[in-house]
Length: 465
Picture (tube, rainbow, N blue to C red):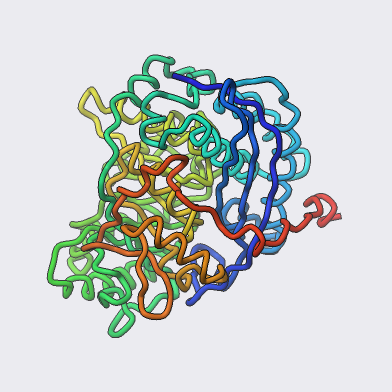
């Protein structure tokens, strides 16, 4: 049953995060970037004051890949998205459901960001992070956990932003959810990652025993085919079966280039190890080209959108173009993930297969990974890309006491690796048992005193002037 709340305050913080190894995807290599933290205070109707929190990396050149912008400018675009969203959310002064508050603000958010040259995907970042923190506070105020609360639709999610559905379909989907006790790790292989030998894709110290692998593509069919051949030879030495997904991060210029790659996957013997285990291809072309390019016969290979998922109508539009899936990322909005999972379940009743995947770009140990993992476990994501434990050294710049507090509260998710606290992976899986804590998947919060206030951005218009 929906519970209403009234928002009282929103505060933003950040912390630097240095990567243990460079991560190259698309046209950028990341060595460091800030992590955002959100803290909100709400009044839960009839229950009093509650506090909630969320976290996410401020990732450059993913939400906004325009070449004329520097990585720092795209991070500032996310900071500005947060600031705009804060103003819009705090302007809503009446009691409402958490989804009702989101629905009242998301259209104005996208419009206000457009006036400042911030594209829709980046515009959605601000509401996505605020929504998670508000939901955390609501669940705490109602003294319930994420899985039970969402089964009762405590957030009041309805079909006002998805007219292809109705309220009953969303409510029924949530009521029928049985959270997954385990979610398999899908190990990411970035474009600069080692392929062969020690530290390579088949090194269990690096891949943590993963059975699923996500392989980044460069957009050059010949180079990608050669690299996939090398990766396939290494993965064949694992001693157990595996499955793969491919992610181009919008690097394939058009259908012609994409068709060249798929033709090689379909016919080249040296690529059989990869092609026979390929689950789907993620976001091959730029988001604008995607919207203009029906996949036609290519659709048989299975494609999903990710960066092109910048609105509530993106999945139906992609379905019409031949796409069968869409990514769930809490940085794009947890309510949209739930709506899209409802759609996938509804569309699959007739025998066709539609699905939602877990594609993690921005989740680090602590709040971010726990909340995104809980979201995936709720909607049925059986394996999820987890970059954080691989590219960042444990809890990164967090104080040791903070990391230890998370490990003590969530011992199934973290372990002392000898030098510091790290994500604990059990036979290639993450366990979700401790995510049933009151609130949104966490028993503890970061050390707020160790964080600095979010930097104040200038608008992209001012930067480009």
